[in-house]
Structures are given as C-alpha cells and as structure tokens.
Length: 146
Image 1 (tube, rainbow, N blue to C red):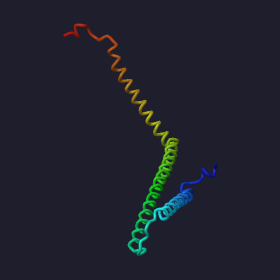
Image 2: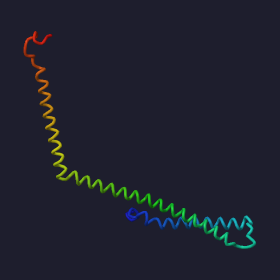
Image 3: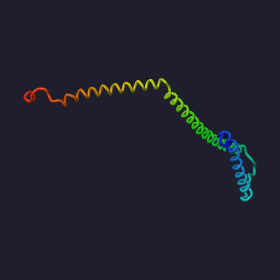
Image 4: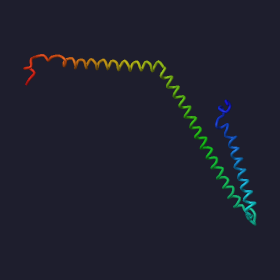
C-alpha cells in the first residue's frame, strides 16, 4: 500500500495511457472488420489516390494533436495544483517562523505598550471630565441662573 501512495501522476500515466490506446485500437479494428465484412463496402476501382492518403494523414494528425492537447491540459492542471500546494506549505512555514521570531515579539510588545499608554491617557481624560460633573458646582444658584 505504501508503494501505491508513493506513485506520482507521471509514473502512472504511461501505463494507463498505453492501456487506453490499446483498448481503442481493439475497438477500431473490430469496427473496421465489421464494416468491411458485413456491409459489402465497395473498394475503389482505382485504388488509393494520393489525395485520399493526404486526407487520412491530416485526419490522423488532427486526432493526435487533440489528444496531445488534452494530455498537456491535464498535466498543466496537475502541475498548477502541485505548485499551489508547495506555495501554501512554504508560506505556512514562513509565517510560523516569523510569528516565533524575536522581531515579531518585540513589535507586538511595542504595540501593546502603546495601546496601554493610549488607554491610560484616555482613562485619565475621562476621569478628568467626569470628576467635575459629580461635584457640586461652585458658587450659588444665583450665579448659575440667567
């Protein structure tokens, strides 16, 4: 089971691609034998013409290019996923390294101290504003009324 887990996409691809092509060839051969034997297809009286040969070659080239393009697309998707996984693991390691570094701890300590100082200054201002309102105003009511 460990051996199966260690196999990569590119190590499995040739084996399965060969099997796939072999199965397709068998089906095509069976189909051609069926067509020529049971349908009484008339063979051309002149034989093969060079235009027929070129047409067949271009058709085969088109099919081969389509299959090759599909394989390249699958390989590109697989490669993109591998690059994404590698980048993700490297970024996680880099962030962990930074979060455990002395520089980060120093910066975090400075930020916390700044916030505590701001909060302390804010409390002092709040207490300074709130303190006079809790006391009785100085002077008589006559001084405060219009």
